[in-house]
Image (cartoon, rainbow, N blue to C red; front, side, top):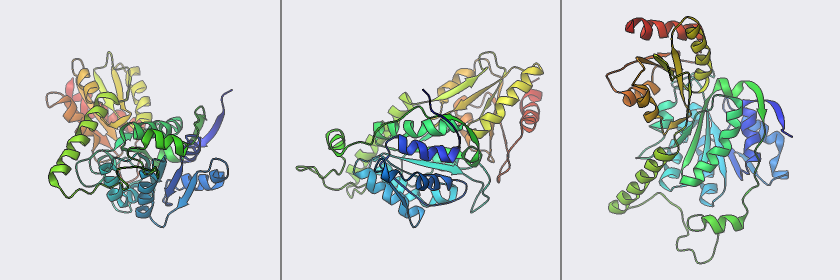
Length: 362
């Protein structure tokens, strides 16, 4: 029998962490994601599964605790919101450089700076292009529902361990704070020390005798060796691009115009499609689920019959750059967004679609 609950997006992340066999959560409170650690403290999983939950003294401390747990082969995670993720940037680069798996949840808020506690999607660049220094990538999942907030914690750990790479679940304050029905249909036990030693003993610090290396680090003083490491990382990212692209399409087969939107914006744009179709305009939507890797080939495939694309996001225009790179300069691509914590309405997006795309291409 399915277990169904009405839960807030942030709360369900905590529920998923426990049910996914997470070994440790290390975080610091910041609006609008504080309910994640609050819910974990209420659940007290250390009494049931043995999961460790620590409120660190800062975001910098929490990401370095994640580094330590990941280095021992454990399922570990953290969460924060925009400026808190900025403080984790160095640690994320270290984790990627050392090829360590972890899950990081970013419940984005308006910026720049301390900004506002209202929802935003202006961390797209931070997640997909500039999460820290050096040539590395996070794998980035973008949920648009409370159910996906739950599911993507499981998927995040699977991808993190498959590729030995940090995974970010990039959501926003709207989805983090909204309540929806969620089916709690997945559960797995924590990994035993024996399992970790058997499956990850070549890189995890398990205390296993006879290990060649007894430290995990991203430091390499020999530039030639460091270049070889970077070649290995780039090959891994190529494999991620080849195998892990996820997206959803709506009414794109006959569409003359396509909206590209993710997260909360894609929910709003679903209504825009209905409004446009009622008025006789053939409008579809492509929703990127993985922001890295971005669904470039899926967008390219639409060029054969789509006249124009509108990128809709709660930012001044970040994802739109990847849309333009995907479809090239011979197709009209425009952007519409609200920012600073303001959220667009379906009618606002529809008006922008007509003004920026449909009327230009008549």
